[in-house]
Amino acid sequence: MNQKVSATRRIWIPKSNGDKRPLGIPTMHDRATQALAKLALEPEWEAKFEPNSYGFRPGRSAHDAIEAIFLNIKQCKTRIGNTMLNPIILGRVIN
Image (tube, rainbow, N blue to C red; front, side, top):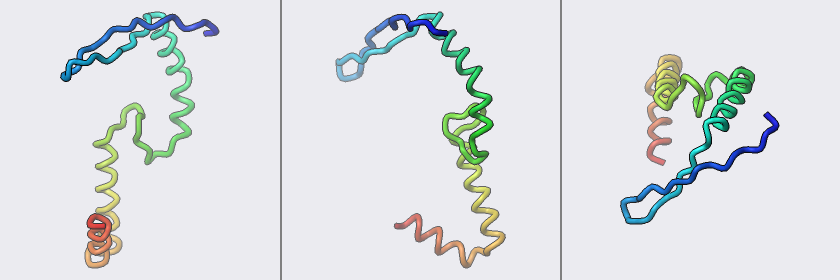
């Protein structure tokens, strides 16, 4: 893995306004090296992340984060009661 990275293939993709934007495509060897590094590093780093972290993690999505938020609000409502929590939530949403 102590190799120098090959040059990426550059292609230009047309945009709706007539301009073009660059897109770099790595070689197959470089892509395989990236995947190998990911397979080696991901388990160690995944173990260090907090369970309530959802950003760019395997098997987690924005939908999972939203679901966790709603579950937390639901649990808070049952513990505190709707009369105390509703003004707090409305104050946060309005402000």
